[in-house]
Amino acid sequence: MAALTIRAVRCILTAPGPSKLSPGGGALQRRLIVVKVETSEPGLYGLGCATFTQRHRAVQTVVEEYLAPLLIGRDPRQIEDLWQTLHVNAYWRHGPVVNNAMSGVDQALWDILGKLAGLPVYQLLGGQCRAGAAVYRHADGRDPVEVEDNVRRFVEQGVRYVRAQMGGYGGRAALPAGPQGKPAGHYYDPDAYATSVPRLFAHLRDKLGDEVQLLHDVHERLVPITAVRLAKELEPFRLFFLEDLLPPEQLEWFQMVRQQCSTPLAMGELFVSPLEWRPLVSGRLIDFIRCHLSDLGGLTPARKLATVCETFGIRTAWHGPGDVSPIGHAVNIHLDLAAPNFGVQEWAGFNEVELEMFPGCPELRDGYVYLSDRPGLGIDFNEELAARYPCPDGVLEWTQTRLPDGTAVAP
Ligand code: MG
Image (tube, rainbow, N blue to C red):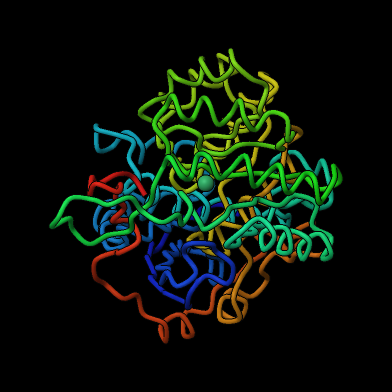
């Protein structure tokens, strides 16, 4: 094929119903963002995930008003050059809006390259190191016994890794009295949460034994010194990993955690720049990197990050929540299959509408996720169906998180 050029770049928004299995976010209306890159070759197009559900219109504007004019007429096979061009073109770089916009384009270019080659994308990355990706699922409950029951339910389905929470992020303990006139919001008590977690895992290990791999997500809900204490207190229960123990603004505290205990640590879903992950990786301060691929800028930067982590003995556990499109989940799995240092994959599952809207979704069977094995990313997108599920606008409620005295904090 001689001349092949990008003919059109479009951004399609859709909200195919609530997440099937997402603790704390079950009723969340997810706004998915798909980028479609069309080429001069009839019928040859690529799809990418640009989902930033909290700022969907901003991503759409960046794709359509700024990236599309830069891309039209260029060769879609020059993935690295195009990624670098988009990355530096605004001079100021990094950030979730522009990175997600770039990810939609970048993943679509890999999809096109795979279709041109007649190969799944993981083959372009060096071929598979494993046939399927082991996943972890989310179990929640109001008390330790209910959490235990929900962990067992996943184990019976063949899942070997389960993330256990009690009452969602930060727990659901009764709140101490706050000042009069405190604003509405999603309140939680970090002290009650911190004391509840070791009790939960003592119960789970006692009742479930050592067969199941247990994980937990702190979701940045603790002040740093309490986070250090929690990591120490969880050490006897042999977690597979403890996730997002600290916020990105407090990375230096990981040194102290490391000095105090050997609880495995996973970090990175909020990272948007190498400046954030580099000190943690080079300092061997975490055990799993779990960035959100579209927030990094797509597959191109993520595959490099995986390789850097490999050299430091750090495994991958890419972020896989409900507010990633099935295309984004497929990209995670391509990288999972190709990376020698794959650890585990977070798996939110798809609802019925998504399965119909995205033909070729990866499939979960007995604890492992498998790809469709078609060329490219192996997944398609039904735009007519997507148009029947338009994105709602409006203010997000669940991210208005507050401490008992009314202080606004990260969700
Ligand atoms: Mg998390």
